[in-house]
Image (cartoon, rainbow, N blue to C red; front, side, top):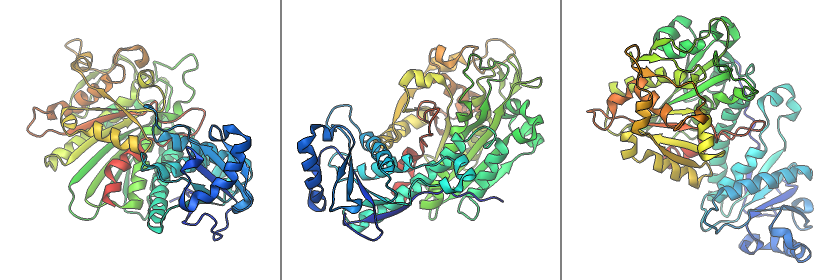
Length: 523
């Protein structure tokens, strides 16, 4: 079995800015104003104050300052800008860190030390700053494999901390979170052949070999057709091309101690979305290798679990890896397909394949939860780059989460939004309404459920909310709402806007937010 190197830059922390072991070759400072430099950092005021006396823009844009008394005799100051306005949030730090590291690389730094002074109103600013820097230092998997000499952009990265305890914690958490985001970026960002379904399975098995995460892969076509008929419908055209055949990748982590929480994740892993018979015409197909970022996020979250090993929690994941190909054997609109939950589904649009790929795995998760039912223990999720409407509704950079009734009572969306806000992985909250259920009710005696209309989601009212209703109905979760004897918390997360730009580097969302809510308080 192949193994894969995640190549996180080696991290060191120091409590003394002028530390010589390891040797650094420059300082990257991220803060809003040099007036906040105090204590051990006050020494930075001298070179920056002198520069400010000749350039009033020093706190408005990134600058490179000659500083003879500091490592490399140079300081990059990447200002965050104001932090006290209604709309300012902790992302100011990650944004500034990205700019600062890129300027440091341009200056030739190979061993920079990152400095972020403590912030009164943004307690996670040092962690967010470091994660921003690490995002800028990511090297795509294809580059690492083809050009090993280019596998890293720097030799190592230093980070200043006010104490040894803080430094140890900062390095540990940031390294784990970044490794999770690297897994997410590797899978989500790599091209549709490098990360075709069988190769995703190889990658995931390699990453988690000899770890606390167990991995099993379902590849048998008959099993897929019998157990996951909706996914098999999407796979029908791709299955005749061996390298494109679907895989269901199942992951499981069980922490030490008494288990009081079980999380279940289903991630959309469409390795390439042509739209199928309802083909994406007019140039809209480009970038559709990113349609696997939901499944990539599931794998990334498990990578965080494998490193931090939180106690008292069990996590089960399913990555639905399938290609939505077009050809003589592709599924088409008007077909009737019986889901795992024995619901008759009328296909309305083959470009709504993501919900088809996930719904039977969501049903399987529901079955597991009912079998081991305990009130308030189980939380089910789907994660997907599901709809263009999500981008139309909230723009880029934001995940959208929507709860069913039990999850709303448990405040899942509110708490995940709060966790993401603190960790620079932001969420907006939407609501699943009665109109969303009505939209997917069968329109004739033939079908119970309509999969989709024949319009793009971006042109459909409530285009990102109604798919959540479909997933609830077609999986049988509608039988486990607030009026049930066994209610189950279920939340759908649409990351179409937050998964990252194309062309560009995937963000790794929502790995950090999920870890902030469910992991960091258990380690």
